[in-house]
Amino acid sequence: MPTNEPLNRKLRMALVGGGRGSFIGRVHATAAVLDNRAELVAGALSSDPVRAKESAEDYDIAPERAYGSYQELIEKELALPEDQRIDFISIATPNFMHFEIAKAAVEAGFNVICDKPLTLDMQQAEALLAAVEKSDVVFAVTHNYTGYPLVRQARHMVTSGELGDIMAIRMNYIQGWLVEKLEDSDQKQAAWRTDPKRSGAAGCFGDIATHAYNLGRFVTGQFPENISCHLRTFVGGRQLDDYGHAVITFENGALGTVTASQITHGRENDVTIEVDGTKGSLSWRQENPNELWVRQNGKAHQLYTRDPNAPFMSEVAAASCRLPSGHPEAFFEAFANIYRAAYDDMCLRISGKKFETTDTLYPNIYDGVEGMYFIQQSVASSNDNGAWLPLKHQAARR
Image (tube, one colour):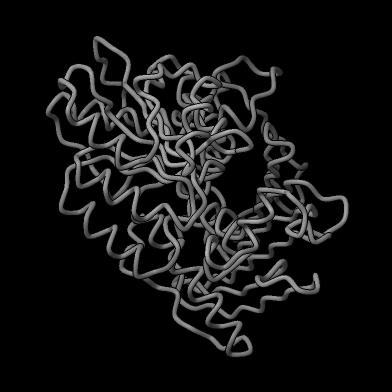
């Protein structure tokens, strides 16, 4: 497990996106400073320069570092002395802006933490991968569900062989907030997520199925082989899918399913993963994140709770906890664990030490590219009536 490389200062952060009305921008800002290892000092918080500067007040960003665009942010931060300029840029904009901002930041030498999905399309994803590989920057993608302690515990149990050979993986993300056509109102989040020009080729599958798929890859370490997908748009007049189901074959012979919905009445953010092995099975649910169930035929069901002092917890899972058992930890803490892991590599880079990009505790550029390939192949398969298509990509290095 990476260890903290101490610096004699906090890392300096800039936020792009996250202006008034944003959900994920505030999450990034909160998670980034949770462990007191970073401070938010600059931002370009909106594509509207006036709104960007007004929003800076909400984050206590000084007026002189409240920029009207990401281009201005990069230019003026580079002009500052090295001991004052930012160390990394967090990107919390709609999908269609990720590529241009991330590429500019990487080429300027800034570390990046980017919201998912990585880019608008696969061509952009591969271009960004090439830029990152030419640089020495740390690049993280906030598939934040991998930050939960018991998700990391599940990963340890699977990869250490406790479940035996993996036979099946069920990955689900079920919501209901788009069962009505909110994009026709002034609902900001619905408007861009259902617009192919801003969201990309997929709606529900690009927005939330990517999280479920990444979670399954993280927990099991299994490499995908092929996919057959069916996407549907049930709300009349909507341009992108609001429901979908995919079947995935893995190289080891396991069978996986990904189901995502944004039109299921009464469901909120129900992310679940279930893994079946030859020696046992496990299940975890994001809405009850401090519990992990492990089952074996003929034995009492085992309930693992989030307890950093318990002997059954792996080193990584225990180190991902901040509170004693019984005090719930959830979304912000998991999100902060992605930041904390990325910070470890940022500190190594600043100290002039090497870090590995290909196998990190935080989701990295390769995970981001693989997620974009999942979206592309899901849409292509659905457009071909569920045809089986390859899902193996060279970026799958975990």
